[in-house]
Length: 619
Image 1: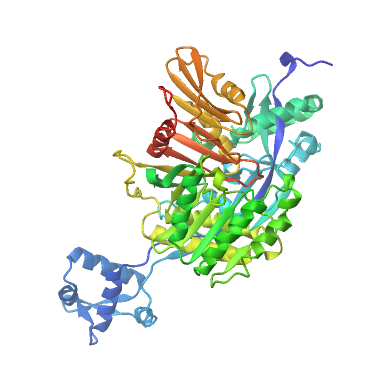
Image 2: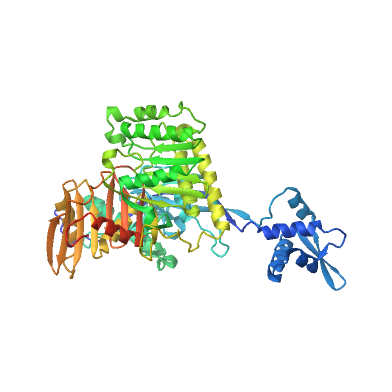
């Protein structure tokens, strides 16, 4: 039988999920100030059974009464200072717990820690995560009881076969109390609860090319679902009884747009990144050579620990990495190098075994620094340098640190950031990738970076900087009054969500650089949906055959070559609008760590590109 679009109804299918139980520690509070510490010692130092009076303490500290009162109240609430009334005057005495605190030479602290648990689900098409409580899920047994029918026939085919989950990936989804300003202190091991037992019902409409039932953050799955439903349509449509009963199940629950009804109205309009940090114009570069210098400046400032993530490693880049590690080790720096390679296309000269052999020479080199690297290729893909410095942690993503000299001029943006809370979150993510290696290959680096993450996040939280509006100092290289922006870290399929948003909201300028295509194909992709647009528009496309600058006045497009622009990178796809640049690592399996930059730093990047283009229109 031949099916037409008029014959195709909306088809209900089940999106398969993995569910995980996450146990984690939440902390709130702060260490007491130096004033409170000294106040406790002063009360203790007063001799006599009646302790000291408020007047005595005022004479010692000579500070505003409000500060003195707040300090005393804090110490009394903690149980380290007691009040005793003598006549009409109040006297203060140190308790036994207060004496123990002083004896152990520790600063008083009201830090509180509690253990919590949350269930996290991962869809099995691309690997995106969500809180199970935010989705109206059904279980396999529920479907079988309601329909007396096997579930597998109506389940979408899993494409993501990774069963382990990185605790760091779940951090942004773990509930915490905003009123108490809690932060994630520690994430324990994660156990997968069930396989093939949890599902999200979705409704595919092939005629309208729409999928209902997906939460906002998973909307990129729509094209994959429609493609599979179209391929399996006849088989799925042959079971009308299943379709009807599944429809009854969906109506009987709080199933609304794939989310529980009480939460659906608050669904975000944009993809929520894994983490965000403030940057200045001096922290963002466009070419691989400038990015390498940015990373080298960070490495020059460290004397303790460095984490290097190197994606797409081959023998040549492994030799560069070895020399870099040896130089750092001679300075007494501990280096943890986590690398991945394209195993599907690995040649005999760039096999994983040879890469590990090349890197092994760094362990026998002279130097007091410790060296760790994986012998088995990691699944994670990223170009990242994260280092501890005397002023705090600093990272550069998209560094191009191991690139060849011939690559220095290519378009390969990089960003440097130093927010300790964000870097603590990033270190926790990287520690999880170390833990995924077989045979405890990464146990030592994982332990190191998990503890550094705990320290950085805690220090940032107690300093009140987790949600602060503080930004780095304005770059001296930028003459503009505004010099700041945001770098956003994206994990895996998040980059697809951001890319679709940028494509749908094209501003006056739009750039797409992809060495895997041609300029004609890219030009078609980014102009075919602009038939209704009016006014002046700019498009820049870069591919294996060079660059083209497209300008539109009214409804007429004009294309000119742009030979002055840097060659696109084979390792990154770059998508840019007026005020945001997305840099995606390509050619590697998930999980991939990509990033975007937005705000003034992104707009200034267009000026830097324009300086390379001689056209009167510019970019």
